[in-house]
Length: 73
Image 1 (cartoon, one colour):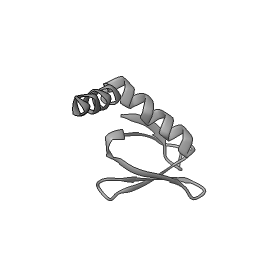
Image 2 (image 1 turned 90 degrees about the vertical axis):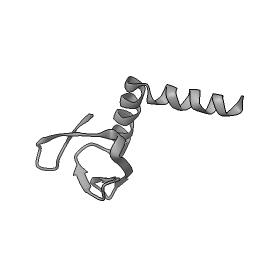
Image 3 (image 1 turned 30 degrees about the vertical axis):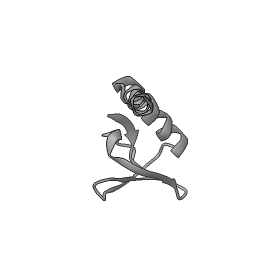
């Protein structure tokens, strides 16, 4: 989960694995795989950085790399 801030200033904890798309319009809108859209105060770059850090923490990045290495063998 990543911590973000809704436009009204309230914190939200979002399952980063559900993020499908992030766009700035000029507010940052996050589209989820569930079809729901959430608008947050953080810039898209910050959200991407938080997602990247979260993926590294849970080992998702390493699992993907190992999987690609196994395919090449």
